[in-house]
Length: 48
Image 1 (tube, helix red, strand yellow):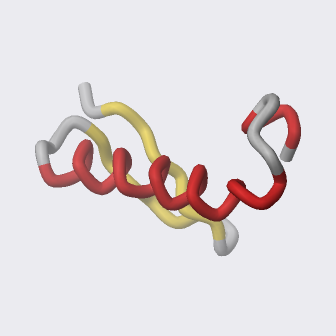
Image 2 (cartoon, helix red, strand yellow; image 1 turned 120 degrees about the vertical axis):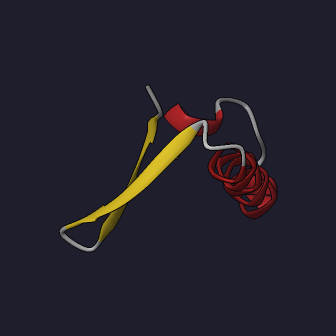
């Protein structure tokens, strides 16, 4: 996870993930992104 969060302390990973998911939720609500499930994973993409 270091590559994802850089110098964020390990104790803050949950907060970092929660913030990222919150941003994705906003993008979905504004129809600026789509989400699909593939192989048990959620794939977010910008809407065109």
